[in-house]
Length: 221
Image 1 (spheres, one colour):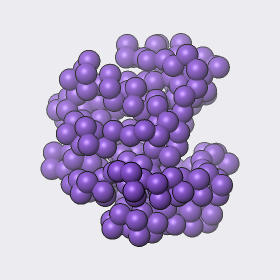
Image 2: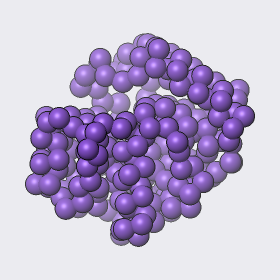
Image 3: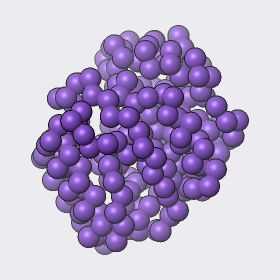
Image 4: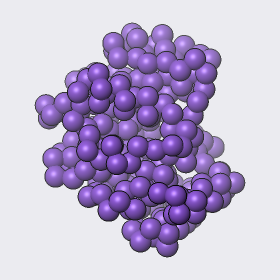
């Protein structure tokens, strides 16, 4: 991995089953990472501590947005990170592709991972995914594909501009909205589409909730 002091941030909530696999892969690649246990009821924290020394824990579940912010603040303040890469704990990202993000951070402030909309992605997910991108374009004038993807990266400079208020899954849309609103330099990289559990992720109701929030951001940001 490029030695530019980039740190991977892994938000985890009750991910004891998949976390060992994820962290083993990262350790083999000698990736620097921080695990944020967001109030898990299982052994997520104990497992994470077996693999790395940078493990943070919320006493209660605060949401993905809160976990990502905790990890970013720690990485930028305590580890003097130049950039962070967000990486989910459910083994639905390819660790080998982290290099795509570290390479892209050399020339851009924000990097969005974009999955291919193929047979591996359920049709309803494709429709909701594209709806989010179109909605963002109508509100903020920029088309950013695959907004719900949790695989993305921010430079230190970008983080100061996009630091979010969302504590839940709306964080993905808020980051995209802030990038578009403030015209922050960004790029996209193709990532592998991996699904282990098709029932996970945002529902139609969740998507409507986030889109309503985006209308508010249009006037408040």
